Image 1 (tube, rainbow, N blue to C red):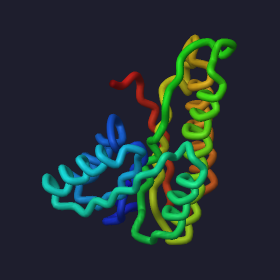
Image 2 (image 1 turned 180 degrees about the vertical axis):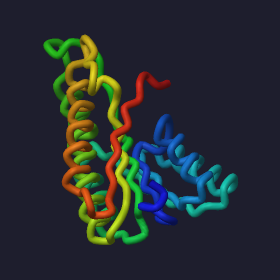
Image 3 (image 1 turned 90 degrees about the horizontal axis):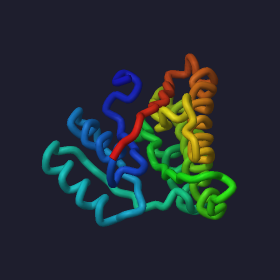
Length: 190
C-alpha cells in the first residue's frame, strides 16, 4: 500500500485512543504526516505532541464528532479537497450491546450515524478525491462480527457487516484507479 500513499498525509478518525491511536503511532513511525480526528481535543493534543517528539512528523488535529452532520461534512470536504491527504483510516466507531427489543433507539441511531453514515461519507469523499488525484488508500475498520454476528449485539453487528460489504464493493468500483480499499476486521480490543 505504500506505493499508493507515498509520502501523503494520513487522516485517522477515532485517533485519540485504541486502534486509531495505534494506527497513528505506526504511521508516524513510518514517517507519515498525520491529520488526527476525534472528539476529545485534549487527548488528540497529547497524542500529537508525543508523535511529533518521537517521530519528527507533522501532526495536525481536527476536533470533530462524526456522529454530528456538520462535523462529518467538514471532514468529508477536507478528504475530497486536500490534495496532501493520501490515506484515510476510517476508524471512528462505537459499540452497543443488548437485545434489540430492549435497546435505547436514540443511542442505536447515534451508533448508526457514526458506524455507517460517517464511515460512508468519509469513504465517498476520500474515493472522489483520491481517484481524481490518481491514487490513495482507504482503510475501513469493521469487526470480526461482520462475519459471525454476536447474540445480543444485532445493531452493532449489522453496522460492521455493512462496513465489510461497502469496502468490498468500493474496491471493485475503484479498480484500476490507483485507489485501494481495505476492510480490517479485528476481534475484541481493549
